[in-house]
Amino acid sequence: MQGREGHTATLFRKDPLKLDSGATLSPVNVGYETYGSLNADRSNAIIICHALTGDQYVASTHPITGKEGWWSRLVGPGKLYDTDKYFIICSNVLGSCLGTTGPWEENPATGKPWGIDFPVITIRDMVRVQAALLDHLGVETLLMAVGGSMGGMQILEWLCTFPERVHSAVILAAAARHTAQNIAFHEVGRQAVMADPNWHEGRYYDKAAKPDKGLAVARMTAHITYLSENALTEKFGRNLQSREAISFGFEADFQVESYLRHQGSTFVDRFDANSYLYITRAMDYLDIADRHGGRLSDAFKKAAHVRCCVISFSTDWLYPTSENKAVAHALNAAGVPVSFAEIDSPYGHDAFLLDVPQMDHMLTGFLSTAAKTRGLK
Amino acid sequence: MATIDQRPDLKLIADLITPGSRVLDIGCDDGTLLAYLVDKKEVDGRGMDLRQEGVNQCVAKGLFVIQGDADHDLAEYPDNSFDYVVLSKTLQAMYQPREVLLNLLRIGKQAIITIPNFGQWRVRLSLMRRGRMPVTKSLDKTWYNTSNIHFCTILDLFDLVEQESITVRDFVPFKADGTRLHMGRARANLLADQALFLLEK
Figure 1 (cartoon, helix red, strand yellow):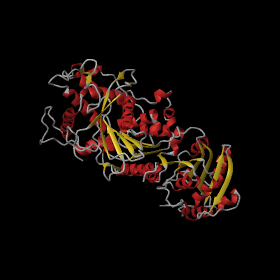
Figure 2 (cartoon, one colour; figure 1 turned 60 degrees about the vertical axis):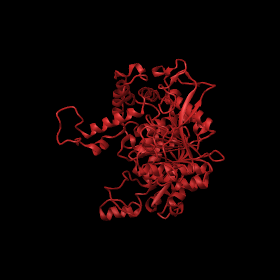
Figure 3 (cartoon, one colour; figure 1 turned 135 degrees about the horizontal axis):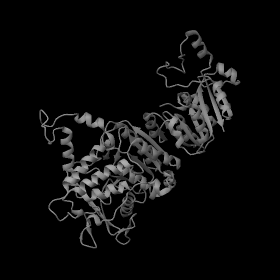
Figure 4 (tube, chains in turn cyan, green; figure 1 turned 90 degrees about the vertical axis):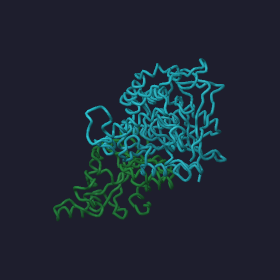
């Protein structure tokens, strides 16, 4: 597909968005993409929810990097999520920086970018915005809600908050809460951003220099958590980067160092440092069971009609099988029809973005029966 | 793809299940029994299987199956959440068969269990004559590569069930081809290849 300027919807103009924090936002802009078209009985809509640093360009060229969509392997004409059959919606999450309202946007009260005056948001707030976007697009109910990692967390919030709008749901490599380890890694990332002298307490938008160093370090740390020890060893081992011997200095002697530096430096071109703070915070605050007296299954009581599929990956240590399985068991205990599998893959957490045939196989079977039970061919 | 007609042991189980009930099939494999129950008996069926390929095959049939292990994962299920819990030819592969059995009857109002009968005369004869762990048609793996680690006979299972004050609602000894044998437990222990137990607390 060709790169194009994304769509933007302006929502919550009359009725402000009420956030979990108690604050309100009005209006809220949402950057989104759609693929395919809504059928006559409006039964073929699928929302795909993106991960922390993902975006709405799920199957179209990214306007900044020029790279193809992050899940274009699976989304497109004739593909698993067939855009000839389904109406695919993907929107940039609240707090992010590709067209959706976030700390980079102008605060209507001051006429200046919000910075860290932007209210703290939650995963459920992101989902509230997505639900309003569906209203805007004339989509009442979804054939399927799909997401991996933070996208999967949004799907869990869909099941808690708007279960009546969902026919089926796929949760990949996710969790219903952030563990101490998850929060710890995010805190390192945030501290790296805030330690950058160019951060200026979040008020860097009118400055020439942005807190790129800090954001790059945050990305480097996070990137390690997306892979596995085996994946790193296999890809880089102790191989040296463009040199015959170690330099007895602090340049990127090793390929793995050079790779991480590259990941960090390209990330800052497409992401806003404050958005990174806000979205990681939203993930850290996620603890769905806590809102339901500590019992996760109580959160899903109203979702007993939703066909669910939960998938974890064997080498994912960020959102490990145990966390995914806890979700599957909670859904099961709530009477929600759910399938769960741990798929063998060497790629760590990032497996859900990569070519893992067993995942495709499971998603194919799940989607075709979900479509059939909704009366689609 | 296997159908229930090729699996007389599964047909015996299916015949016991009331239409429209809630069923958990542990060790559901490729979902042959579950698919039959869902299609023909309008059962609300769920499965559990160790193998990810098994789960995939079930999902492709529109079934709901959790990849898991009865030794560890049954504790997560609430009491009385199913009308029937089925454990077909799987008890002997459990690390803790007694705990699994008790869990089945906690989760389900009734449990349907089938076992390969290690007391069958061919098995006894094989052990006696060869002096080595029996390898037969229905027990076709050698001792070092079998997943069956807790073999029992029909009488052994009766002993355990009685010791735990579990009621045997139905007992069906049968041959490998699924033919029912109409006889008591002692004779069945000698003659039956397999046996089905319908249990209740």
